[in-house]
Amino acid sequence: MNVIKNLLIPGLLTLGLAGSAFAAVDEEAAKAIGKRNDCFKCHAVDKTKKGPSYKKIAAKFKGKADAEDKIMKNLTTGPKVKLEDGTEEDHKIIDTKDPKELKNLIDWILSR
Image 1 (tube, one colour):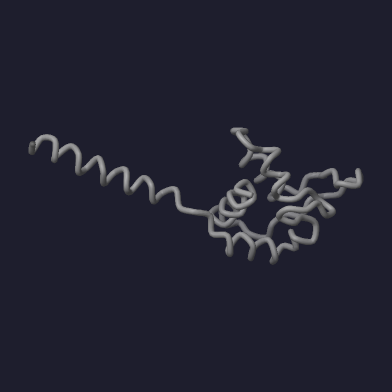
Image 2: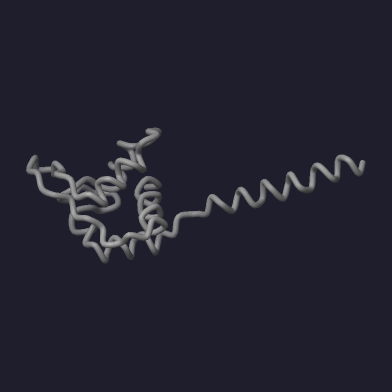
């Protein structure tokens, strides 16, 4: 019995700690960085504006291993992007260098 207890308790603690590493998206922080960078000028959560909705972006990248990397590139390098009307323009570069803030924004977009 002690052997089981000695193995089970640390294992459960490890699982509990691992679970906390996958914290939920901070929606308010993601929206704040989006507002600060005028993201909502071109994007909305569920409707197409000048750019695709976040739901459309999330659907496009669903199940793709490189989703975070591709969105990160768009947010940090300002590539040419094709708009809904067929025109192109440089994507705005997000004004933060905080990797946690960027990751939270990307996770929020992908969770739509």
